[in-house]
Length: 197
Length: 379
Image 1 (tube, rainbow over the protein chains, first blue to last red):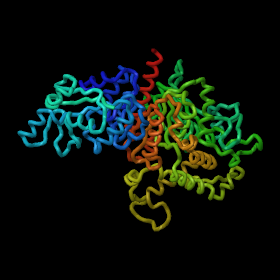
Image 2 (cartoon, rainbow over the protein chains, first blue to last red):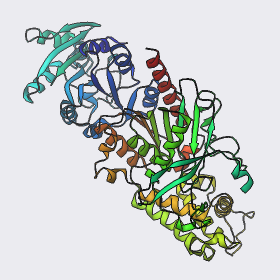
Image 3 (cartoon, rainbow over the protein chains, first blue to last red):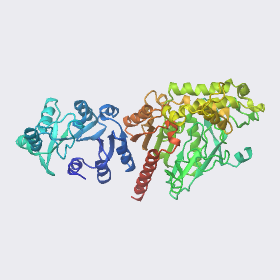
Image 4 (cartoon, chains in turn green, cyan):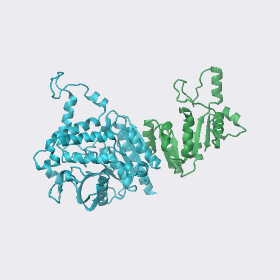
């Protein structure tokens, strides 16, 4: 399991209700269900991935988060997870609003567009950045709304979203983001993971 | 045919059942078939519900019609619903014509066949009648319930009526309330039967005639709705019966015409016209949402079952959107539900045909549920 999922699963306590939006092949869900006895549901737009999840015994619904989160009642999950998907939505703000409504707490991870390699790529090559985390060209990338760790924190402030924890991943190492190290983390981290409500 | 129908498995239900129409029935037969072996812990039983034109003979050769069972693609040794592993039960619905209490049975009060004096039954009546067989077989909790089309409606009704009687539920290509379009199509079929002079207000059994024409037309019309436009176009297109020559008559010029005619006549041999009226009526009356005063999620309020809802992309009779409404209601009641739409060009009939991704999903869902339950039991 990738480091990001380890971090997310450590945030989540045992025996909680969890909704994983864009759950992919269900790797994180499987871990949460079988190792932490969480009651987990998933939402995933790709049929073949949904079928993989069902085969694993996971309850996953085929569907598009931009349209289908409305069906879940308020605060019906202890945690709603959105792993590296926020930037791919047409209306990320609306999706996040839904997540905050459904989950008592929400875990959002974002690929950090402020990462130094990305900055240098644009500065020196003058073309849209490609990294191992963001491997697609500008014309076929699913990512419509890239942001930096700083952007996301600013956004939360503006929308009165409370950030309970801010973590970042730098070369598979996890650390806390604080007011003091924000500038630094926004340059050297590949991924931001936030626990918000 | 009558001799063989006497040999099929039947349970005479001694209790009385209050039907939704207000009438009470008692000492009524329900005909059923089982496949596979019930394990010691009775934890491998799956109740399969049949659709409008189906019966209890899910797989193998149907002893009455001598045709293959209606779900041979999914049920059998090594198949998705594996008869080597699970114990499969299927019951002919109330109002049916394969041995269960229906219009073809004798009314003990008059000693005549019921015909249209048979009470109008509902999906809820059908499901409530089936529970007696589970009691008889000593099965407290099923591993799963599964069915497509009207079978799916029974799955929903069962899950709602008996929230603790099944670990999982698989409603396929169905709806929680019959749409206006589907009522209209059923009405077309009924009118075809009733317009046949030999129908004789449902008393055709008093003559030697039966409304074969009417029933065949009903089946032809219905059959079109089970297929997709693309499917029809690819299979038949404008292909002619007779080496490329139009006959300039009303004979079956096109292959699709003779195919439909064949479907119609084949059906008449095995199905009772009055049963067709009763069962389509039951489908039309089905409105689970209304049973819960317009809030479908209340239908599943107490359910602990794990659901797997499946629809097909080219099904226009029970389209994905109607299946999704079930999923949404389950989600808003906090139920455990998975959903997938299977890509298939084969229309509503996809659930009966060899659609590998569908069968794989079915198989894997049952497999994982079975594993989970047996792990739980060990703990």
